[in-house]
Image 1 (cartoon, rainbow, N blue to C red):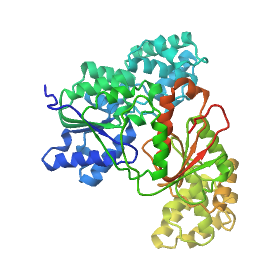
Image 2 (image 1 turned 60 degrees about the horizontal axis):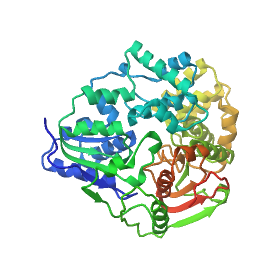
Image 3 (image 1 turned 120 degrees about the horizontal axis):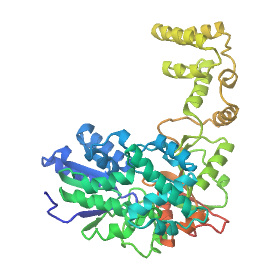
Length: 510
């Protein structure tokens, strides 16, 4: 068996210091010496990290995506190396059946794919029980110990045991496996790929079982790099221990210069993270920009009418509160993990009708999409689409369409909400958005709302950070963990950091 000739090297990347660029640079250097892309591994627990690396490599190194065979999440690699099919792995429909068997609700699994490997979040009671089962196995501790560590008085250990057995029996009867099974099976039975270069990104967030998988990969890897930052370890509630990364990083290089974090924000971030006991002290420099840190008691004090904004909350509960408030104010935003605050199709249809009625130029694709909302029957819509295609070919689009609409009894001089079939709740909200003059850019939202965890790796010119926490966070976390989470939130900003003070006792103190 091939094994690494040298100890793995560590690339420690403080916020905004260009960790991904550095890693892509390493790949580029090795390829220039003749290394084949097929023998390069770029792995992470995070789908976001691997997708970004793959995209950067394709664009910057001029490599066909299909040659980057091992730019994957750890679960995706296990899936590939084991030769599994999608029907071998538990899917959302399986958890729906499990719901019926045990009488528990599961929510978080709905958007998961078979290779994601993401743990269940706090969406429903069933999700919390499944999280405990998964975390016990990935940490290598008993179910009872994990249950006690979870320390949630709303959960019942007997129910947990019932679900554990039901899950085991269901997997046995269907001959399917879950994400944890996938990694365990790879460690026990899988064949590690032959790699000349192995990069493990976001390594600080690997759970013990994932480190076991990495150790197996090392047996057939050449040069190996661990990349991450122990100060940004924010998944301790999932069983992540920053010591697992720190202890493996004796041969480390710390990236020194941040392209993102301005001076005063850097100073605040350093004060927060220096309070962490278990960490590797590191020196890194901010950008040349001074930046600003401003404190508020109310979000309404902040003018977000212009510029790029990222609004960060500690938990989904507070992110939901922010989202509700933004909608009540008629603000258009993107919610990480959920999408636009209103259907982009509905919003675009309203904008298209308005432009069309005002005799502005509207392209065929937008008009075609708008038709699905016009209040006419199916046969009339079919005729309308046919006329639209003819008009597009003859370049008489607007004129012909208006004639056909009039023939169908649709008054094109009316407002969009009088013509389009849109729910009342969306109609009122869209009216507010359009009155604000907000331009809709489907690919680049101007305002984003997110939890700190979902925003990791992201950035914005202006960041709003809510200090609200919850009893749940305080229960599951220790002070070091909370400091790391808010350190990540603070360091997302490129210019201005707006901090919303909390009057609640469940609050992080900066």
